[in-house]
Amino acid sequence: MRLRFPFLVIIFLITASGFGQTATDSITLDPQKQLNAAQRLLSGNYGSAVTVGAYGEMLYNQPEGDNGEIDVQRLVLLFGYRFNDKTQFITEIEFEHVEEVFVEQAFVNYNVADNVNLRGGLMLVPMGIINEFHEPTTFNGTERPAVDNVIVPSTWRELGIGVNGRFNDLSLAYQAYIFNGFKSTEADGEGGVSGILQGSNGLRSGRQKGIRSTVDSPTFSTKFDYYGIAGLRLGLSGYFGQTQAEDDVEEIDGANIGISMIGLDARYAYKRFTARGQFIYASLSDTEAYNALTGRDLGSELQGWYLEGAFNILPASKKQKLFAFARYEAYDTHAGTAGTLAENPAYDRTDITTGLTYHIAPGVVIKGDYQFRDNALDGDSVKDRLNFGIGVWF
Image (tube, one colour):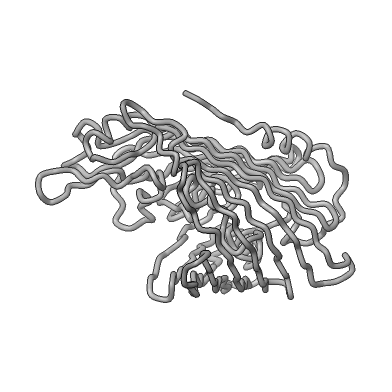
């Protein structure tokens, strides 16, 4: 197994821990205070039984030389209900591209003790940063990082049960869940087997999203977050298990694959400066048999990472914030292949994104950026892209 861990990410994670006190007190910017939509509902509805919120994004994408596309990419309605001081229900209803409707989350949270919550239902898999913190005011860039689309298949949510909590004396938060897994194959209706997973986007097509999900063997997901240094939050994630297939397919050799995914992430804020970095690696077993059965080109290793820095160019005394940022990311869904399958250099990609993020009010952001996109295939022409967007969250 080849593990090509980027040296820059190691340096980032080590040096970030050496910074001093943070002067940032914004929930949006300070990673130690930052809440995602579900956490905000859980912490904010003790005064009333029902809490309502929403977030959404309207985007414009202009590939070089092509027509632009404008889209209400998503609008998510948030609802929380408090049954009593220990038991709450949270749900998110997502409208994508105006016409598609999904349940993004729907779970019951039961406070067992000060440091332990029992949670069950449709939940986000805790891997990396964006999958849990994807509200548009919480990240720079009109589009989410590609690493959190192709390697971590955000928004990644599945049905499961588990525990979470934090030990403030240790500055440590934890999550541990049992989920149903990705779906890898299905009967094609003609006596054969159709493969769902593929080389270009790895595991993304296999998300079941709680839609009549099939489960054969449960998967295990966990994450630990350390917040003992002012302004800094470090995360370690893991996901382990097998893919799922329906009863008439699961016994066929190559129908399922094994998945071991690990992630490291870091977020830092100091005065007007913020930074984040992330590294994700996944090892997939039995892909040679899977590709032979399905005719797919699924890789045996997936890998991606990015580094980002941003600086608020407005005075700290201003309520509005205008961040200039730059992000470099590299991601490869053929970081390794099994058997006779050759690595496809078109799947070894890099993006450089630079632009502005303008917080005109708490919960309202205007974004603009330009992306320089490339891959390792000689002569391949990947189109650069200009992006604009408006995001809200309340």
